[in-house]
Length: 199
Ligand SMILES: Nc1nc2c(c(=O)[nH]1)N[C@H]1C(S)=C(S)[C@@H](COP(=O)(O)O)O[C@H]1N2
Ligand SMILES: [Mo]
Image (cartoon, rainbow, N blue to C red; front, side, top):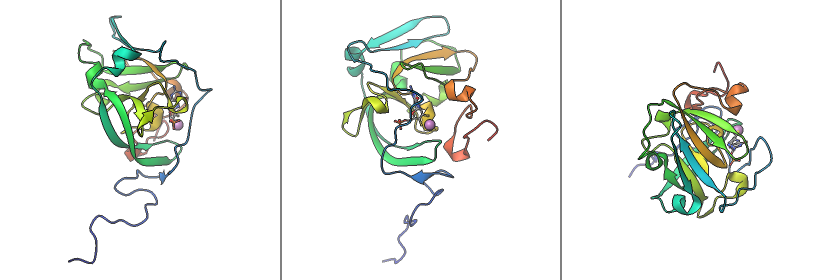
């Protein structure tokens, strides 16, 4: 019997195995939106993928929610320094959505119903790293947190997880999204503290 319990790291005050540098633990779920919450009814909701050749694939709510989903528990990290550990989501893996999509693109722009955009490398959205999430902790995803559905890319700062997601647009060349244009880091890895341009 050992007295020191392996794996116990005491109070987490920033850094450590689960908390990226400069982050603190949040127990609530702050809402951060650049503008008002758009009212997106599932009856009119549509999720679209467009390729660089202009081809389009779309799903209405019934089609989207009939796709194979995954229940995932992930840590999320906001650039305003709060992190939330072990959050539970249900979503469709981006891998599933891209199954019949032919593209040579390396970059993706996420477009939301409020006009928000954010850019990501395609390789960060595949291989089980990203979902279009529509349930949170056992309930429908609430409008203020991005419902009906939002992008969930937990390994990057949360501004990359576009709420009220409408479209993923494949791009051959990278382009900055809303916050990236305003000086946020182009990539946004919380473990490397890539908050702003130049970090
Ligand atoms: N469509 C849209 N998505 C968005 C935003 C936004 O303003 N519009 N804000 C981003 C930012 S800066 C953050 S930190 C997270 C916040 O998600 P939350 O409100 O669920 O905490 O959403 C991101 N996704
Ligand atoms: Mo943010």
